[in-house]
Amino acid sequence: MNYKSILASQLASQLEGVTEEAIAELIEYPPNPQMGDLSMPCFKLSKQLRKAPQAIAEELKQQWSGHPAIQRVEAVSGYFNVYLNPTHFAASVIGEVLERKERYGSQNIGQGRNIVLDFSSPNIAKAFHIGHLRTTMIGNAIYKIYEFLGYKSVGVNHLGDWGTQFGKLIVAYKLWGNKETVEAEGIDELQRLYVQFHDEADNKPELEDEARAWFVKLEQGDEEATRLWKWFVEISLKEFQKIYDLLGVHFDSYAGESFYNDKMAAVVDELKQKNLLEEDEGALLVRLDDYNMPPALMIKKDGGTLYHTRDVTAAIYRKNTYDFDKCIYVTDAGQSLHFKQWFKVIELMGYTWADQLQHVPFGKVSLEGAKLSTRKGNVVRLEELLTQSIAKIHDIIAEKNPNLENKDEVARQVGVGAIIFNDLSNNRIKDIVFSWEDALNFEGETGPYVQYAHARACSLLRRANGGSDSIEFGGTLEQLDLSQLEDAPTQGLLKQLYLFKERVEQSMHKLEPSIISRHLVDMAQSFNYFYHECPILVDDQAIRQARLALVKCFQITLKNGLALIGLEAPEKM
Ligand code: ARG
Image 1 (cartoon, rainbow, N blue to C red):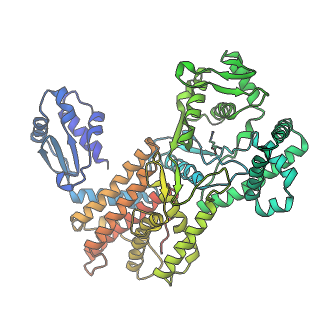
Image 2 (image 1 turned 30 degrees about the horizontal axis):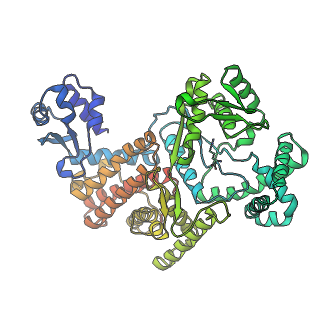
Image 3 (image 1 turned 180 degrees about the horizontal axis):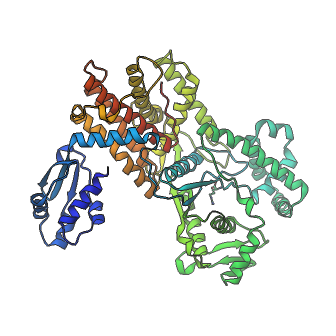
């Protein structure tokens, strides 16, 4: 049941010249239920209807013909306030959640159309640090949200596996590295070699020439260069995979920058043909002065290609391969100009789908009391952070619930969840400071808090099932005495479950997973209030069954929401 559309269609028939869509845009959910369950502010209609807002509201009230879902309406200070019929509302929410279960909140907006999501995309031979967590988890959440809303998501890991840095790494490895250490220490050692290269090149500039020469060899397919490069990629991917496994993230394609090596020439030719390339001191670039942007460099003086060249080529390839509705790039806000520039290049090439490309930027993460700089190699590695979080949660659980059976598994779910949730709980564009205290708190607006509410609901369901391991709810909607669900805490929780659907849709339109994480906190808070105010496992069967049904609906909805942002929902913790 969609109460917003019910109300919008009824009001549209009462208001001449105002469309249902326009009304739906205006309708709000007042924070305080005394001001109605839904409310339409009449201020914006005042000009068009040539009436004072309060007069519009009054008239709407007088002409209101009633609807079974709506108990009463009021006109107050320019607002038209609507009070839902509480049993009708309970029946509609509980009925829908029990019926749709793990699909509750989903819709078929996308009708199977493709969305390509370019996210995570770490650089080979560089540590996967806490900054990469953001692109990975924001991208993963958007991926799942689109799927939930009927699209086919295609997750692409555009690995940074090409570029002059590989020439440097080869030189460094040949001079100072050895196989055993690289094999034992992986990316740490590769990164150390890379740092050493820069330190030594300060005094020996000829090292840079050597590095360039090795990269040229690599580009020409030289056997030794290719073998070393492949090995660096393999070692890095093995480490990245460990993190993706911990985070529960998967990709449909690992076509990184090197994948486009043999595809760029054709695109550069096309740019030439379309008269977009200009020569500048031996380099080839697309001028973007008319759009107030610096030029997009496509070919370097030495003939090498660039980040831009690979992105333009990749976009064309993806359009041809996936015929996407949208191709979304999740990176830090620092890369905004890069994307603006090459999106424009695609447009200038005459591709009408340029407007289907979208950059989804996010703010920086810093760690309380620590630097995240890459230059000296002293980054906070994500794997370490996750391992620490799991260990800390393990300690907390051991204290809170010493008899819990699979502590390791639960500590992993909650420890990883805490880090992810912390990352997704603010608007993505905001810079965030990571703090252990904030992330792991069981009381704050955190992952553990939300997961704990889920476990609490599961525990109630198990107790209702005679202490078995089952969290099923046996009853059906028809057997419930819905008049038991009219009190304020219960209606408040129902409303949060109802709003979940809208929040999911909003989070897709705004590409903002934090809308879901914040709603999960709201739901958990409403549940805890309900739990506190309304005893559930009481002797009165009518009350008990009605409240248990709501507990089950809460458990289902919360779990669905957690899954969308990439968190598991342990049943015990
Ligand atoms: N490898 C880049 C980085 O770590 C991110 C790549 C984003 N995707 C893209 N198609 N440019 O900053």
